[in-house]
Length: 342
Image (cartoon, rainbow, N blue to C red; front, side):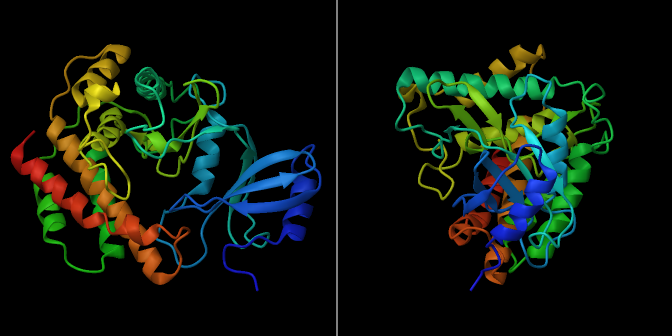
């Protein structure tokens, strides 16, 4: 009996044969274990290996799981310094596999799931963090007009709009009242910084495990999972990644909050931010506490959605409940940071 996440290989194979140039003889599809939002599969065909990413089944939050946006932005970034896989096909016909999906080339590389990089040498850890920093700066330097992405989102008032959006998304997936989240929302609304006019292409989920590294070097060969990308503010991506410096190492999504970063060769949060600013030619970042606190709020809201989908039976991973359970402590970390002010 097929589950909601199984693919009909015969139907899918016929469609891909007809719509991807050079595609031949699909014979296997294996769902990757990771990925809490959009189910992702490795496709094995006579013509090579590919990756399929789809919307999950079931009732979904409005504007969530936008695989068509992921496809569009990665296709647009192909000629830029930002490393992305080659896009092959976007299928908006839900009758093929039951939901919208896209197909891209398979990248044969490494994904690091633990931010402390326990299996790498001290020198390799420093190089990996430097490579991530370079990709982030390159991303925020992309000319959105030249890339054809000038209408990829609404410019201006990014944090005000994002606070409103994710509060609504959180309410839609709320399962109980979380005092820390309520206090954090109130604090963020009261401490919104004035719009400084900065607009860039923002990834929306910029972190270590959304990057593919070369097998034999510390080069980033693919920045993945663009579902939350939009025209936004560069400090949102930077602060979102810097949360990992504050999240404990034993969390479901391991961070760096309880490790000796100097001994490991990993830069401090301050060093990482300074390196980013140097690469982009900008000065000191004001309102940093707000940006990081906002990031805790946003990730908490995202993981609350993961938790709700798990309860509803629509989550795409067995780890969904563990990730969802992080929503509460992340909100607590956010309000603690906001009230402490550092």
